[in-house]
Image (cartoon, rainbow, N blue to C red; front, side, top):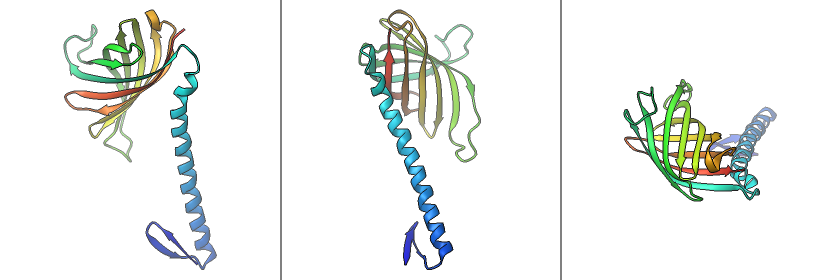
Length: 180
């Protein structure tokens, strides 16, 4: 009996080799199952929240630039931008990182960060906490609602942001915002 593993043919006549092959397959299946479950959870979370009539699935495009003027008082620099999305999710944005982390040794080109993010929209303001990773010209982030004004007072929700970095940060936003 033979098994193909990582493009190599392995002789499985010996019991210890067969056990090793089964263990590798089981581990690979466990990792694949966990990844699939995590992706399904992320994909279904907005749909589960959207059952509420006051929850809206948000899809938007955003552009930002790093500036040293126009930031909030006391900020030496920040990111200012514009967002254009559905359900009235259009306006300006402000982000200022308040912490950055050390890249993981297995992925030194990706750096974690966190900070306060603000959407200033026609019907109110949403203040979010942003946690993300940046590296290799890419950015991935999560926004969680912290507070809001106007239409967004007592709002809840999560947005996922992903895109490219450079002189202009260009991202897409997807997620769900629920209003009271």
